[in-house]
Image (cartoon, rainbow, N blue to C red; front, side, top):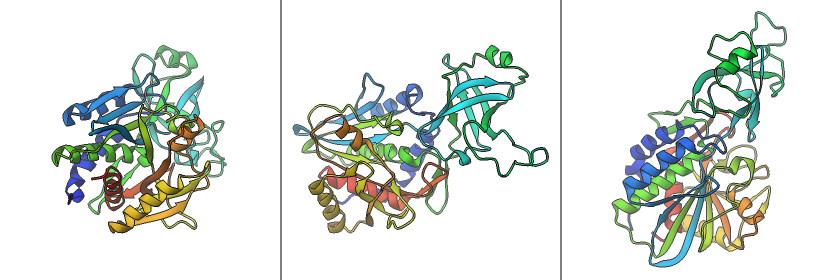
Length: 345
């Protein structure tokens, strides 16, 4: 079927701005759930939330056996650890590059739903005051969150209802350029979640009838290693859609779809990976095959949980991962095309 994926560029970016600007650090699924459900309702797709707080989109096919896809909507972030006279001490969620947090705006979300703006800062934040302002190592111990409230003591913070364990979400600063670049935090892996929604819209718009049932799992704990430790029933194959890495000795770019052969957990399924490479070659996709030694995915979580299911990994190339990330619609388009080919479209 001849599908003009490029014509969905505006839909993709409009959806990305909405999804990216919905806070969802690992385990905080409250706000993203309603956004995802609304897209499912608009597209006529079955939507479920698991007991754990992950989500499933289901498109019924002719066969009950299901092709699985997994992406994660949870992001890096932080949590209130304690209150100090200067502000909030935090513990990081996931594995961010903490130096990129310095000077970033954020929102503290209390357990009662109140939100307070703030800024991540070094404990030596001023060049005019501190001799180590430009040399102090960025660690949790050497950083804090400055609240935009008139506080002088820890008791003043307590009166705001802020407690240890409250989430801290970073401003993603999502930007779309006229040249087709998507710049934002959390392209890993919200770009893939938006790709899922775009695929669902394409299936609806083209009235595509699928042979296999399709179940898209959106996990909320990938950044801490156990996102897809539970998967839906009847899955016969699982394609994880996450980011492709860019950098030293890698061939992936922001314009390609990455096919990962091996990550820190080990090799991906041999036959499944070969299938994806052949689909990419036969359909003239711009793709790369790489090895990511400092990387894990929801397929690793699935296998660690004991599932006897073949798994593979693809995704658009993302520059500066776990920092200030960037990709291009070319890579997103190639990823969407490979997803559709995997689904037999």
